[in-house]
Length: 251
Image 1: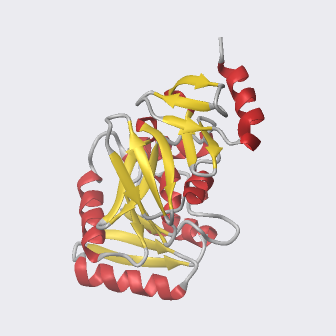
Image 2: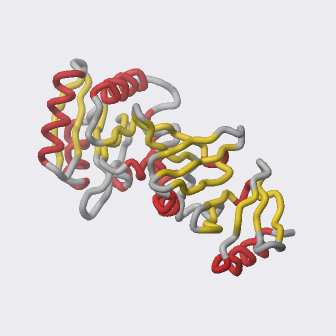
């Protein structure tokens, strides 16, 4: 049996997750529940679990800060949260899984099976969680989570050329010339990417990746030509900000 701990500030969510694990993951044994990060750290030190299931959005300390309080990260970490926006920060190679509430049983089972496989894998758990800790600390997040019909798709940020609003949806244009239609508003992506300086909202309908700018045309109101040859407008109220951006990156 592999020992597991659940950390979540909602008692109902803890009970539900424990029931799902007991009914669908026979190799796991829940040895403790915790309502916040401090009590979760105490449980980790006491029980030395193989797997920790942790919520992210909790009072005082969030699930990412959990790693700051653990002396020895010798467990696999699976995040469980109602907010899929956090996946941008949760994923590199270091986190085993990211489950969005309400949790789908099939995805829970897959995450648990992956955690079990990785218990003795290389690089070691400590190395991978230390990598995750550094990524969180340095904001070096390289992936974005996109909600799809069967869960989440993790996309490398460098592959995104631009976002275009489409009502309550957003089109994402990629460097391989493909396009994704995602059921999130453009404003949601602006919030998610607010810490990434490579993305700039040039217009109410567009967010561009400045790494993919090919040309800036000042005539006809101003437009930005991207590496896929798309011409993206620059709103009048955004021109000064865009000019400042250009000045900061030009040779």
